[in-house]
Amino acid sequence: MRVEATGCGLRPLLGVPEIAIIDLPPEPDLAAQPMVALDAGGVPPVLDPTEDAPVIGVLDSGVNDHPLLNGLVVARHLGEGIVDDADVWGHGTSVAGTALFGDLRDAIPAGALEPVGRLAVAKVVGDNGRFPERRTVPRVMDTAIRTLHADTGCRLFVLSLGDTNANLPQGRVGPWAATLDALARELDVLVVVSVGNRGRPRPFMSATSEELVTVYPTYLLEPENRLAEPAGAANVMTVGAVAGGTGLDARHAHDANVRPITQEWGEPSPFTRVGPGAGGVRKPDVVDLGGTAVFDVPSISLAGAPHLPAAGVITLNHRYTEQYLTAAGGTSFAAPLLIHKAARLLRRMPNASANLLRALLVGAARSPDAFERRLGAMTAAERVRIGGNGVVDPIRAAYSDDHRVVLYAEDALEMDQFAVYRLPIPPEFRTGGDRTIRVSLAYDPPVRRTRNDYLGTKMDFRLLRGIDEAELFEHFRDRDKSLEGAAPAVPERFKCKLQPGSDERASNTLQTASITFKRDTGDYGEVYYLVVRCLSHWAVDQVLDQRFAVVVELEHQPGIRIYNRIRERVQVRT
Image (cartoon, rainbow, N blue to C red; front, top):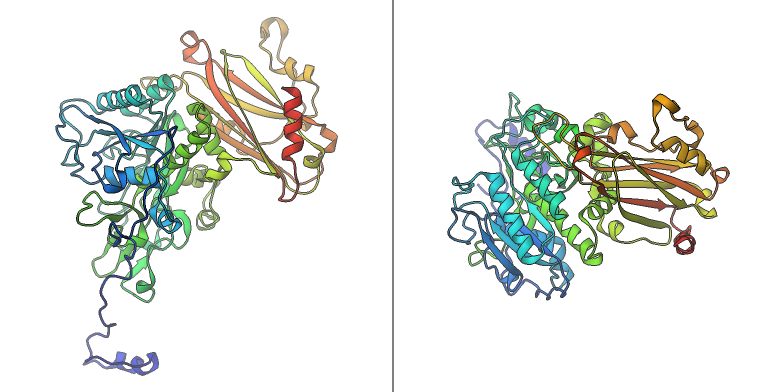
């Protein structure tokens, strides 16, 4: 019987035993998919990339000749044992589309689609979704990256792949990760890797299906949810996933058969994996949009993209003759969203090293408010294991503005040496409310997975103020302790207490820390000192110097103009 009535009229019927079920009338599943249902006529035209647009290397299951990629694929490489470059498995085309255009949910309403670069494609996964058996995975990756780099000059690579079956203790890495670390250092390339997904058949080891909702997000910290190989690599950027909301649209607003796990944009995705990485380094480095999942009550299972387009990102469908676009979810799509931001940055700074790109990106990362609220009961260390340094703001990474200035340097240090950078502090920055200094450091040490101390060199930084330069150099210079004794201590009043502290970030090849001043700091003068140190380790006899990049951001409240004052000081010193 079909009835039209108010809720008050229907409520008494719920107590009648002869009535088995009351449900809403069925509706066609169209309202949820207006964008993924677009055909060629509904998608905006694709603009030609600029001549100097960067090349993005995609190592995946191949990339099909989707009409939106026409003329954008500049090179193809087939892994050994793979005979056809078609993307039969269907993963690589979607990853490539996300790398070039970002989330099409945001890009399509803006009008014409602007690709951030071009593609160099390596098909390293077969049509059955597996790696070739004739060569080891590290060998396949090494060949693919070297080939694309040599043929196209590609300096950005995205790997939305991982081995969830690698039985590695937490904090240890395998040969795949070590290979990526060595390549990143040797070729000066930025490699972005997804943390991997967990969720088959469930995203945690709990007894009841109801806990799919009620135990979130604490189950993310379970040992079984550790990073998938090679996400623990030290010289790459590892990306976890956050949700874009509940994953439900208007048609599910009153549907008791589906229960969302996440509530707001920025909460961790239910399937994202967690750190630490090699040798206990902070991983993931950052997070980005990867979507979410919902609990389907009748089937006692999880549902997400592509079935629920609102639960994922909108990207290219590999079967484009059937459907132009699709929805996709997972950390596999957080990684290309980050490489998309890195490509925008490289397009603006074409000569930037991989270390500088990493430092600028992590320096522009902030933890979403929803992430902090949802994980408020966890410790800071536990939140870092899930969300790293947060989500990268590409505008903050690429530009300064009137009240926020970004300074950077690329350099190299010999073992057990240090560099001192003078930071100009204008009068406007010494007063006037909250002011923040953020320092980010990236370096690419040699690695050796057969050692407990995986990294061959280590680096750190300190921020000092109000100290005499001679006293500073006397403290940090190398000395023979048997003849000269210990270095004189630096008084605590001269130290800027950056957070996280030096001990917490000591093992990371990508470090960022900040301090916020609330009181006036005029007594400390117009120059602060950033000290960057290179500490010898087992590679002391193999490495002449260690490359690095350091980025400093000085940010005042909006309306306080400091850019021109600092620019004048920097130009005078130059």
